[in-house]
Image 1 (tube, rainbow, N blue to C red):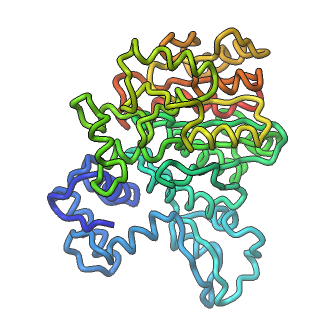
Image 2 (image 1 turned 30 degrees about the vertical axis):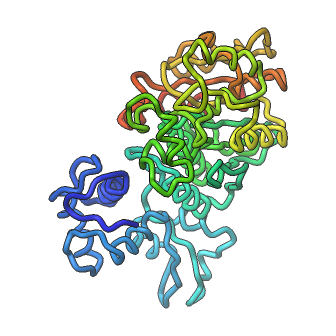
Image 3 (image 1 turned 60 degrees about the horizontal axis):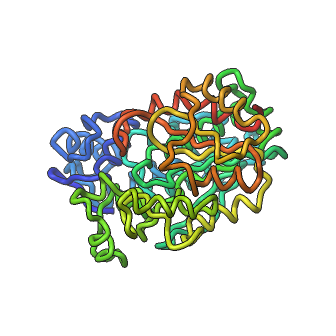
Amino acid sequence: METLRIGSKGPTVKLVQSLLARIGYNPGAVDGIYGSRTASAAAAFQRNNGLVPDGIVGPLTWERFNRILSGYDSYYVQPGDTIYNIALRYYTTINAILTANPGIDPFNLRVGQRITVPYGIDVVFTDIDYTYEILEMNIRALQVRYPFLEVGVAGQSVLGKNLHYIKMGRGDVEVFYNATHHSLEWINTPVLMKFVEDFSKAYANGRNIRGYNIQQLFNYASYYIVPMVNPDGVDLVLKGLSPDNPYYNDLLRWNTTGRPFSEVWNANIRGVDLNRNYPALWEQAKAQEEALGITGPGPTRYGGPEPLSEPETQAMAEFTRAHNFRLVLAYHTQGRVIYWRFSNFNPPRALEIARIFAEASGYTVSDVPYEAAFAGYKDWFIQEYNRPGYTIETGLGVNPLPISQFNTIYENNEEILLLGPIV
């Protein structure tokens, strides 16, 4: 991690600011600008953790931060320890420790025994730029905190980043949710990740969400989630174009908009719009490109040289084929609409379910605009399986939506996410 001091800027500064705020310090606004207030908060943290309180986040401070960012600590039982006093020491709960350590006997701790102790804070960040690095960090933390989660890899991106999946539940009814085919629409990745965290925490604690019995849902259904389909594009948008990117010169040539990547780039790192790369009337999507001013790779709307030309879309198709999904949700932004139809296909109950989702979210059921009517993931799923598939367009405004919309988006969509297996 980079050393941070007064004058530093960027996503890493936002990460530190958000972390300091959630553990009880006051860094000021989470704005990505390392000013005097953030430095004072960092110095207070350093002072309380036996570090030199210089307000500079260097290797030793990062070492301590990273332990907290991991979401848990490894602890070796000392004489006189109980689960209760260990929980107090880490500002966590007895149940959180028991959940993270399946099979542990809380009444028979052994001196020297290694246990995992989750910190008493949520791990999914919902107020900062959600990069691939943060996604991986959050997945590792959730996997340790909630060992009942299944975590795996559905495939790789062009640049070799893992397309992680998470499975919640052990039931026979399978549903699949994915987000961020388009890199400007990264806000939906923390939406799905927060759903994983809240669902897992409710299951571990025997609690309901919105009146839904989570333990019953866990036993009835299996929720599969790929939270970031386009990690290369997300990092290009959020972290900028690095000279060591193998597509550096190509990307500069392909971005003919005159605007920064952070404002325009929806494609993957090869300039292919992943949600126009599926074999669902792909030829008709291709025929639109000239009218849309698309002549080749670029920020958006280029469907690639052929269907499933990209490793990301290949991975999503193969992952889908390997399961028996009764329903899929593909999350995009923006418009607060639910698209349910593809061409002349009309899967059983598809419109009825769309209306249930609309009632739960306050969104509007709508037909897809012509320019986005072909070659998307939900189009392909409907065509292949004649089962309900939906594109959920969250939020309002101009992409990329500001992270300040997160709470509203999550509030609107939490019940949809719960309902998937049972509508």
